[in-house]
Length: 437
Ligand SMILES: O=C(O)[C@H]1O[C@H](OP(=O)(O)OP(=O)(O)OC[C@H]2O[C@@H](n3ccc(=O)[nH]c3=O)[C@H](O)[C@@H]2O)[C@H](O)[C@@H](O)[C@H]1O
Image (cartoon, rainbow, N blue to C red; front, side, top):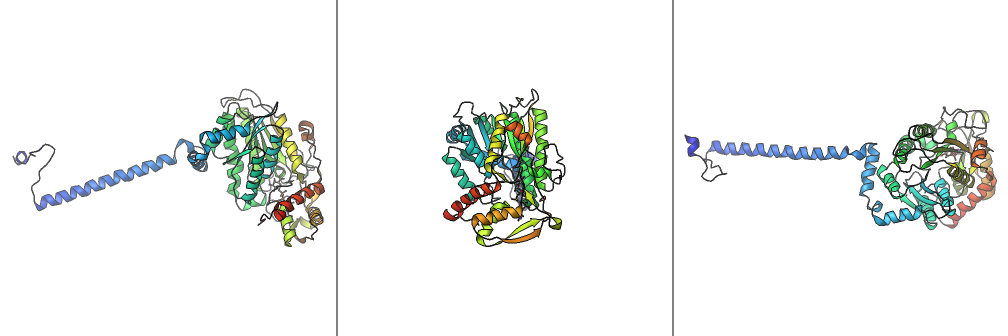
């Protein structure tokens, strides 16, 4: 009855006889315990990471889940001060005014449209990611300009669903002017995923939030002349085929038009796509030809001028920013209300697409001649064969639909528009001593 004899004198404690065999037993049991607890600990770490990477906020995409977590952690989006700024900026100050969320507000078109809306008394809130596709300091300068006129730009990505929802919780926007996008035709060969991220995923995220908002806003958004791709029928009419994109950029804009159709059809969102034709002007985009030609002519660098096969002319329907702004405002003002609520369609809703061009294409070599005259510097021209990088030979807009339905009537020719651009360029970069890189 050894086991009874060796019963512990104190309950809970077990007295062991000291023997080499018992020592070994004790060692083995300690190793077993250590192994067991190590497994438990590793298991807990694994469960923690697994749960956090499959949280509900990651339903859309890994990028958006990451953005959502970042946004929720970002204290600047929280608190009464943030909400106060959002409300103040979105406050309507005129009779029959509208409240507009402008995405891409620190971009070229976004800045001009936001300023114009604010001037006429509409409520305007900006949203911009301030990415570094081109010099972010130019975007910051545009932001400062808008800040002075009372437009607040929230720094955030359109893929950040949590942030978008929060903005709609604070303000029941009647309209969204969606201009945030990855622009540029040729850059699509360098960084294709950025086009998918902004022009497809970003658009879908925005529409998802808009479809669930109460009330649903009416949405006007930037498509592109590039959707006409290899279309040869001129001038380009909205009824022409758009199934031959020549660049991934064009393909993502075309995809956007189809996505718009879906959200209009299923959820009753009022959607208007604007096909912009090579927009230029003060505060423009440094990646565009007229802009970097100006910079390089002034620096005495040679500029590559593309020409098509057999010395064919490459031309664009360059459209001045003020005309584009009028077209955007016309589209917002004629946009009907979305018909859905609670994420459900209640009736048919408006679905529109318009060309916003100038209807007078100009050869790129003529653009260079105008710049030479305005800058009083001779350009070092380097004529090159149009590379296979997404560029098309020409664009030419038929604008009769926009004229009829939006009251759109461009009034600025390229000579006049470039004069205003050059004046701005010189005051910003030369007199203002800003680096043009
Ligand atoms: O309407 C649009 O939907 C698009 O317009 C704009 O694209 P594009 O019309 O291609 O403008 P942009 O690059 O300024 O080239 C202008 C001309 O210069 C030629 N070009 C260009 C570069 C060069 O080195 N040499 C040259 O001859 C070139 O062949 C072209 O003929 C926007 O960037 C785009 O985001 C989108 O909005």
